[in-house]
Image 1 (cartoon, rainbow, N blue to C red):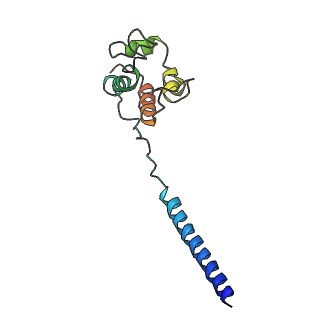
Image 2 (cartoon, rainbow, N blue to C red):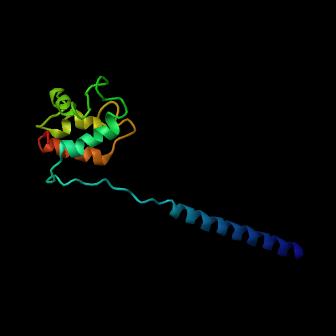
Image 3 (tube, rainbow, N blue to C red):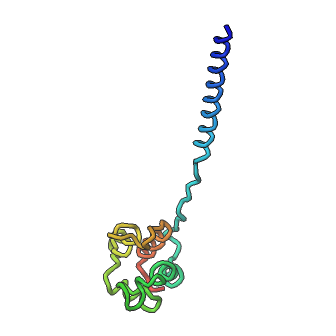
Amino acid sequence: MLENKTSLNMKNNILTFLAIITIISLGFLSGCKYDEILPETIDPGELISFSEDIIPIFEADCNSSGCHDAGQVPPDLSPANAYNAIIDGDYINLTTPEESEFYLWVSGGGSIPMPIEGTDPNIESAILVWIQQGALNN
């Protein structure tokens, strides 16, 4: 009789332990959800300025790293040369902006994504809208 009671207590302890582990596991699983950070959407009607919107991208990610600065890997994206380097280098397709070599690089469509640390949907969006607006030197 004592053996049955001990066996029953042991089973209850095991069930209680399993119930606690299950509850803790469910708490961890539900706690692993993260908030998705959505890219900033750019209104196609908002004018994108080459000097105010695009050049700062180059300075933060492209020419400051030494990759696309004067005398480095083409195109030269230094502020004084960037516009002419992009336009004269045929990196822009005004007919089909999504097929512009410049856009493909920043959207991950090139062999190496640019910037090298990974694509950024906000940068992609700004560059695409700028090209769609005629790739103006403004």
